[in-house]
Image 1 (cartoon, rainbow, N blue to C red):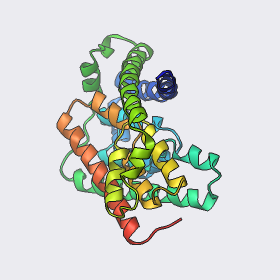
Image 2 (image 1 turned 45 degrees about the horizontal axis):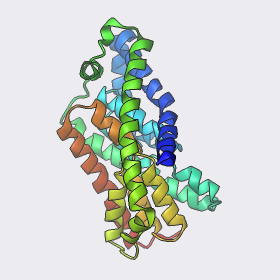
Image 3 (image 1 turned 120 degrees about the vertical axis):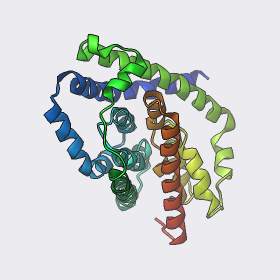
Image 4 (image 1 turned 60 degrees about the horizontal axis):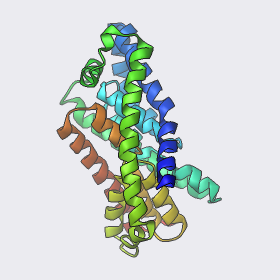
Length: 282
């Protein structure tokens, strides 16, 4: 249990810089920018899924946390959020590199996640663009956190947001890591072994675990030849690190959050099944 506690603390601390940057951006926009600048930010959202997909493949779950915060403030579109969530590499890339996986295999895996993320992001934005307008809600995020940002400076209010969310992440992650510790990785792997269609479905459920544990587990199972690359990708596409946790924390529309999580799961699992059916192997 001490090891679980220390690992949870270490993983949580890694997120602090990303959370702080996200809140600094949001608070700066709320305090300093003009209507013209905010309009430019809104317009740049049309290309958000492309940029978000590229940013997401970096081996840090902090980008998904940052994206969740920015979406709650409606600085980025839903398509951009989904693109980042789908392409997020989390701990996959460091593990593949440390295990000396072939470079071409790594590039193919990253490429699939990137392509799925970008396509899904643009399609979602295309569908929603005619139905709703992008509305800046940074002030609403502040109201839900009861931080009285309008009365405080950018740095102070950003720090208060960061500390609040950090504590939330640590508590939930510790509970999840404890559950995984007692269940065991072997029992989880037995659920998806030799199940071509069911495998991606179950991998997607594992991917919903809102911390780095899911990407570590799925990547290790793939490297150990326990699951196929399509099963791994299904779970990794669904997995968004702590992004889902942050989304549920800062975006108070529970119904909307449930739809986003469901959409993420469906896209990831369907992609995994398609890859399985066409026989992707590497």
